[in-house]
Length: 225
Image (cartoon, rainbow, N blue to C red):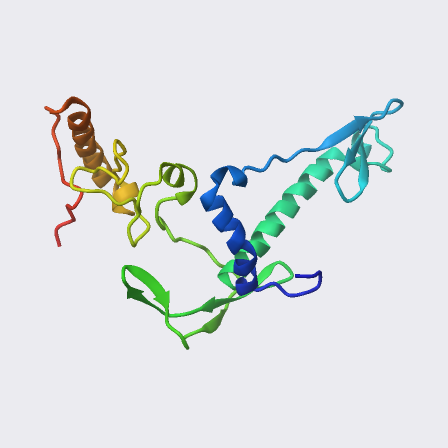
């Protein structure tokens, strides 16, 4: 994609798909080291920083004796934060198809969904826009985070994105157990406590061959309705 071309959700997914596949296959490839170099001015109180785009000379703010001809390091920090927030906002808005106008939300694109094989799938032909100027995301728990521990261990996940486990809280990898939201999905803290105690008993039995620890509930237990 060249400068000036509009980026939409499909183009963003296409652009990032090979990167995501690469990082899933090789998590180490996702580790990127950022660096910056600066050189101190031998005469004045200033530091020359190479940004990759241009050479910036930072110095004292006028309020602390600076001339105002050099970039203030405090301003540069704030500008970097604004740039980070702006790029993040634009990427998320593009992926979720929020309509932005000058950095402000203009509309939210919606579509109906239906449950199919344990996953919500969009219903073709139901796309529409809802005019709005504020969007609050309250999605809660959307599944166990894959990057890092789950992908590193290689445990199986179920259709809802939770770690798959058997009747003893054991995952598909021997010696690895999962309890609480990781295996159950979004739930109350009392379920996490009960599952944690029960999983501890199964871990003890796995390590020692037997256990005297109490097991409150099996992983298949569900609230009474």
